[in-house]
Image 1 (cartoon, rainbow, N blue to C red):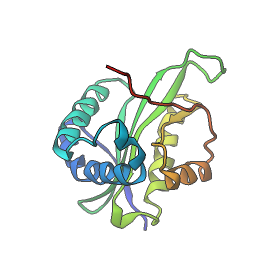
Image 2 (image 1 turned 45 degrees about the horizontal axis):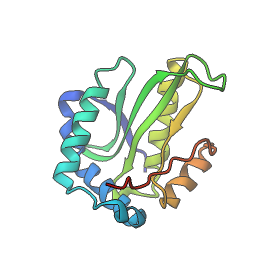
Image 3 (image 1 turned 90 degrees about the vertical axis):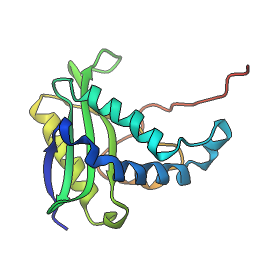
Image 4 (image 1 turned 135 degrees about the vertical axis):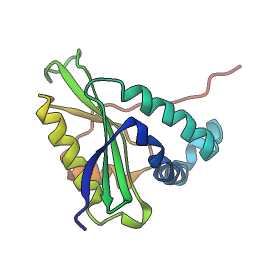
Length: 165
């Protein structure tokens, strides 16, 4: 598959809802252990929250939603931001953050994810960004394998725990 990569405007963000729902379902399957901390939000609620985040992020100067499409059909999307990079490693003044990468269930394994990550990396490089941070839900081993094949290395582990009442 050879998808076309485009930049989605904030006025088109609702086109992402279907794919966000697929990602939510995928995460709930892959990270079933997290249900012990509370149930997954209903898809409509989850989308409203994520939609608000996307719109807020898209007001940042270097944030973007890149979409992979075949004609009018969205095959996947990636949301990327650029943040200041104060930290222990010399990674330049800014670091990229891949907030979301999702590929349509029917398009997985067809190169859509590779096309999107390649477009994200090219966009960040144009802005002088040298490093991109990526978070993966624990249990999503397929995503870890994908990012490692693309050159990602382990950096930080984030844990969550209940707080007693």
